[in-house]
Structure formats: structure tokens, C-alpha cells
Length: 211
Image (cartoon, rainbow, N blue to C red):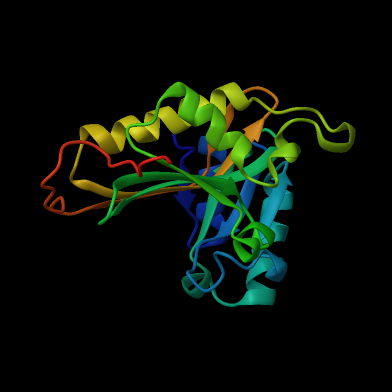
């Protein structure tokens, strides 16, 4: 599961060096925990095409939001535009590993618009998971927009499922955001939590009986 590298930028010169290494255009982003889910504060500057734009964005960011050590800024190469999504997996004590999917953003979080499937996940499960959320039309060309690469998204879901299923010490995975473009997906942020796997007396995921 490739993750786009983000290089630390503790000062403007470091940001310029990082951009030269990654290649323009770049994004300048704050990673401080108190700003991570607050896009309204303007902690992300996109499509910076050269050193002049990057230095100007850096100055504006620190002037508006605080010192670099407080903001923990990073530089990342721009990804193709698309729909921002979130892919997660975690261990539920009752049913085992669960794969979750939803669109990124406050609206989805407030509405609880997230789908879930048990791990291991089949290709049919992955396709149903993508289509299970209420905001799924945004992925399929809602109001004339271009459909995005749901096949690549389903492949990513299967890879996360396989990762958790093959390695019980991986107790939580969070990929956020995952930008699903017209061609391919870009994982811009990832975290993995390792721990001794919880004891399980059964084999494989449990399923509720149907009546």
C-alpha cells in the first residue's frame, strides 16, 4: 500500500529542500493534532508551483496559525484531484477484525455515514462496502462529475483486509485521506497500531444468523 511521502519542514529552507526532493507542485500542510481535522482554519496550502509560492505560503501559514514548532508543517507532492475518503480497520472484541470505509470530512462524521464489513473481506464485500454509504453517489459521477476509480479503491480495501488478516498484531489501521481520482488512488496519510493480538477462542469472523 504505497503512501505518498511527507517531509518535515521545520523552517522555510527545509520546506524548499523538501519540495526540490519531491518535485513541484507541492502541498504545505500542518500536522499538529489540534489542527489535523480543522480544514476551516486553513492549515493546508495546495498547488504550490515553485519556491516563491512555497515561501509565501509558509510565511502566511505561520503568521496566521503560530510558530512552526507548534504547527509541525510538512511538504508533500500533490496528488491527482478526486474524492477524499477514509479507510480503517480495527479489532472489535465481539466479532474480530472489521474493515470500515467512508468519505472524509465533517459531514460524513457527523452523519455517521460509514460502512463496515468483517475481515477477511472478499471482492464482493469490498464492492458492496463502497456502495453501502449514503454519499456513495459522489464516487460514481453525481450531478455530472467524472466517476472515480472505484476498482482501485476496492483493491485498496482488499489489501487492508489482507494486511490485518495476515498479521494479528496489527490491531488498527487508518488511511486518511485516501484520494480516489479518475485513475488510481493516493494514500496521503497512514497510521498503524501494533499490540499483542486479543485472545480469540473461535476461528475466523463471526456472523449473525439470518432469520
